[in-house]
Image (cartoon, rainbow, N blue to C red; front, side):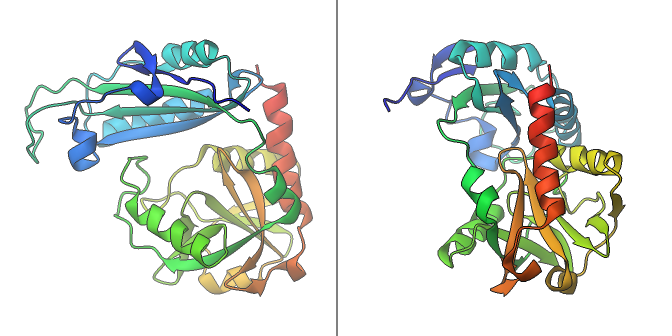
Length: 284
């Protein structure tokens, strides 16, 4: 299938993504001084747009990135411009460009905004949903403000790459014996008819899918608990599954080469994925 040109918006100027030139003095390049969001597109529309925009605004506030433009209309324009029905939109806002200096105190930066939308020609997690995925555990060595969706993802990249190296699809991160989240996802377990996920804290990202599933599963009559999960509980759980914007919800059938639920996909993981897919088809 021929590759379609992806049109990006850089500070509201449209250009092909592979021709886009970003200033070398942008603070995202020097310091990772930027935040981002990834929105899943279904039927040409962004799913959970309000939740993503709320989290983006929170990340900007937490890092004191001021005067960032409202990007909601620009996101919708970019989806339409790229004529994407099934895919994802990436949004990044940096503090801006300027002479390399660690401190940004009282410096008049103007934020730089990047938006582009890319089509999926195959559902990105359909096969994994049918078979379940393998995961490994790794120490969580990330910084202490993981609730900010910043572009500082090197520790996540290293963790996931190591997981892939040993044949796993996700790394479940452990800090001081407690589950935080996956390298690219939030984590849920099922035990004794309860769905359990770690509570919101500085150690985890407040995932839009996580938030959706907590509410949707409750509405389906599931008992949902937000409480700390010990690493040992992963291996005695009836089910483990992960959630993210792109992967939606995926069952984890083995962790550190130990089978979960006998290596079978459990009913709650299947329900979680179905709820996301159903809601995405109904959303306006």
